Length: 338
Ligand SMILES: [Fe+2]
Ligand SMILES: [Fe+2]
Image (cartoon, rainbow, N blue to C red; front, side, top):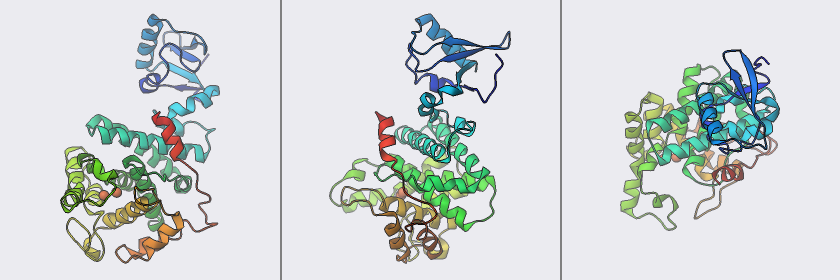
């Protein structure tokens, strides 16, 4: 049987590692290079011997392991571990693609946050590039992402929300842009708080106010983010600006440099709006997350933020607006973590 990409998906070692070792959840096929034929290797419900497990690992390593498209429902939950597959599956809806992309990036961000090393960055980078490729093909694809913002607070959810809201806003402000600019803006947004992983983590969940000392240290997460990015291979201007300037405010009341209005770059101002919006809509120890439209209006009324940007954002979530009804995402990410 010849390989038809519509009918079979090649799977990688990351996905194979997530299947039950001896009892994979679906049928597996092997491409026999010497005869150019795809053969069944394992049927769901069976059990692989240790020798077969080892053989399968090698087959997969060589890029010859496939699953049938007809098993897509079983397979889909594994797609977040090889996100580029979402772009190849013609049967996924826009909503399903957005959901898988969000879960993929949130998972990769969590891993990077726990272990900020190049390998983890590579995986996160790869997933963000899948999303930019998808958005590049049609900018309207951002809408289903905007319907799927998280409402629980944690570093990964915050990073993803900021990325989505900031990208939507940036797209509204820029009718024309290059793929490279889109790549850079999305990466900058998702990584704006990367340096938080270097801060004492109890700051994030502390019930009372931070002491002056703790606060001073906390403000340094901006600098920590810049340093962390400079150590990585990613040190383009948008990223450094997003990290360094997202807590600066138009009236000079922000930190770490107390720069004002025009001295703050567009990327800094954009990240400030998206970051604050992302923080406002999530449940905190001390307060419940605000409704999306209310958060947008509050930011618009706040002179510390770029008015052009907040005025656009304040129109995003009006009742009956073009984005439609919000869809719950938190339980889906929670389910993955189990
Ligand atoms: Fe921050
Ligand atoms: Fe942030």
